[in-house]
Amino acid sequence: MNKKKIVIAITGASGAIYARLLLAQLEKMSNQIADYGVVLSDNARSVWDYELQESSYKNIPFKIYENNDFYAPFASGSAGYDAMIICPCTIGTLGRIASGISDCLITRAADVMLKERKTLILVTREMPLNLIHINNMKTLTEAGAIICPASPSFYSRPQNTDELLMTVINKILNLVGFENQGFQWGEKE
Image: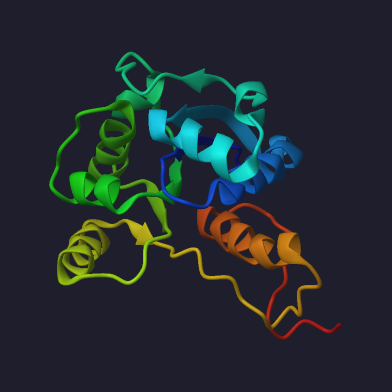
């Protein structure tokens, strides 16, 4: 299996728990990853502090880049990153990407993923959606991005909140192409 170069971006949408679980799962899968890059928006830090009542993002075991660091390797297609996951993704970030606005490292890296025809996954958390949101999602989907709403599934019969939320994380990891042990429909129990 080819190891992947991956970017994880965390924005200030509600759902910091998804980012924490995703990073923990990726740490366990480090044998499938050639290089990591993590970037957090300023609001991501405040939402993480507020929702999770802790600041473990300060101890992420991957290289963290500032959101204004346009010298980060994944700010250029020449670095050859394979995938970017924005989890959670604010609707504002989604809108800026859909409009081609690269005003920070997160939106620039997303633009790079699209122009290089690489995997870009936006894990949205907003609801309800208005027509502008839906049109922006349509634009990004047509450009090759994957809109992956943080909508947990129940057919695996999760027994607690973490198991429920992991249904979203496992879906994200499958979309990137990682070998993952998440629930698959039709498997024998």
